[in-house]
Length: 472
Image (spheres, rainbow, N blue to C red):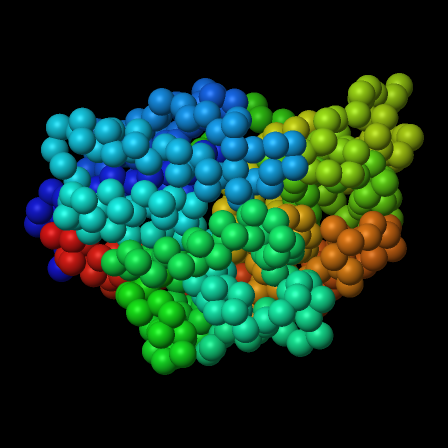
């Protein structure tokens, strides 16, 4: 059933931060553009971290999508200097529940359904109060979804820390999870964010269904397990809907863009794009080794360079400056001069989607955030997986071992500095070796299957129609 036969209204609750708001807005735009749904995005904000001006720049579909930035909530009395990110996000949404309830009550027309992202499950009772449908949107993989909903079982079955287990963690019907690949909240069972994660796993199955940002061809085994495996269904006995890949559209930077002009002069599939996302920052030592590895590989590259941290992702930047040839002082002296014929350094930010869609790009060295991963796969670009935090280790393992579109360092970059010789090997393998071409071919196949899945005859399109027909 095509939901356009009736103008449905959906409210989507987004937890704080651009990384969470972007996939929610992409979902909202998809609902509006392809199903004629009117969507109101409710964005949780905080007094400590006020709404970013960039939120207002996100492209919205005509007059069918609007973003309401909720009044900020204050959790300063609930957190301390050591409070982890997942805990903070869950507390922010929990404190915002009365504000969310008031915002929905103030809407001109009551929504037909409430969608929440996976950090917003504390708001699900609002939908029950209004007697409307309620769904959880997990903007990442089916495998992450399976681990999350099964974690309460693992919590009862396994003693001690997960990272100390000698055997893989078993999820019925799914690929096992290596202890070193567990998501950040599972690294320390004594930390509050672990309790929040287990709580999330218990609350998600209380919804009417789960949407996740993947598609049938990419994760067929895990999706089948979520639908049919009796042991897993005993934990999450609700429908699951792969609706992806949902990603931002290409937004041209303009003909005078330095990076695009540079890429236009390079051979097809010859450039490695290096970027760790907005939150991905490396130590000074690792940046030095990465620079030397790129230089030793003799391959073309475009590198979005950020100053180093003092060892933690959220630490302050070092004081930085440039040497006489323009090389930032945290890079090897003379690096810019020696690599000027093959490399381009971009400070802090570059239009990632536009770069990945350029014909000159043949590989992507990435932190494996799922937004970036989808942008790479849907452009047919293989990856060097360099996970840093959150669920990125899980994503990296999936990309290497299941999807077959990535290579990765022998050791986790979060455990030790990856040396220049190994970086050289990885870069050469992805750009100039037969191994890289095989992954590139696989990525292009997935690009086509992704396009098919979103088409009107595709599985992801049909999943969305099924959800909306139940709501309507």
